[in-house]
Length: 285
Image 1 (cartoon, rainbow, N blue to C red):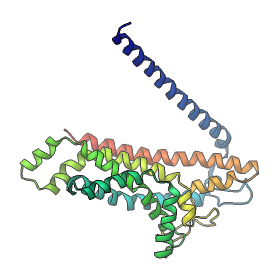
Image 2: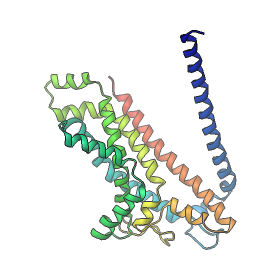
Image 3: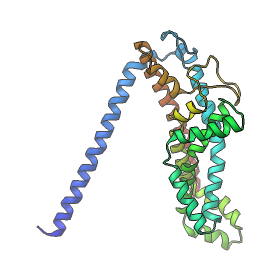
Image 4: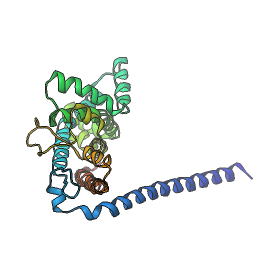
C-alpha cells in the first residue's frame, strides 16, 4: 500500500469519525430537548407566563423571572457592546505593537476563560459594595458585562483582521482619514463577525447564575423590576430554585421555564442573525 492510499484511508476514517461524533452530540441534544418538551410543554399557558412565584406549583409563574432576564440582557448588551467594540477597534487599529500591548492581548484572551464566579466576586466588591448599587438589576448587568467583554473584544479584533487590506488602502488612497476608513469601510465590512461574537457572548450571559447569585439576585422576588435599581431574579435562578424542590410539580415548572428560556435565546439570536445578514448584504467587497 502506497503512502497516498494510506493518507486517503486516514482522511476517510477521520471524516467518518467526525460525522459519528456530530450525530452523537445531536442525538444527545435531541433527547434532552424531547424530554424537556414532553414534561413541560403542557404547563406553558398564559397563567404560567403572568403569575408570580408561589409555594404551590400549580399557581407558580415566571413573570418576574422573565422580566428580570429581559432587563439584565438589555442593559448588559447596551453596556458591553460599545465598550467592547471600541476596545477591539483601538487594540487592532490604533495600539502600537509593543510588549505591553502583547501582554494586554494575552490577558484579554485569557479572561474569556476565567470562571464566572470570579466575575461575580469582582462585581460584588466593586458594584455592590464600593458603588453601593446593592442587589439591583444594574449591578447584575455590570457584572455580566465584565463577563462577556473579553469575548466580544476578541471577536471584534478577529473580524477586523478578516477585512481585506485592499478596502483600507483604497479608502486611504481616496483621501479618507484613518477614522473615516474604520467607520465607513472597515467596521461595516466586519459587522458580521462582530455580531457573531455578540451573539455568543449574550448566549453565555443568559445562562449564567453564579455571578448573579453572588451580587445579590434573589430566588424569590414578588414583583417585576421597573427600573435598573430594583431587585431582580432571572430565569436560570428560578429554574434552579424549582429543580431543588422535592415536589414533582416544580420539576414540571422547571421544564416549562427551560422551554421559555430557550425560546428567548432563539428569538434574540434570530434578531441578531437577521441584522447581521441584512448588513452583510449591503457590503460588497
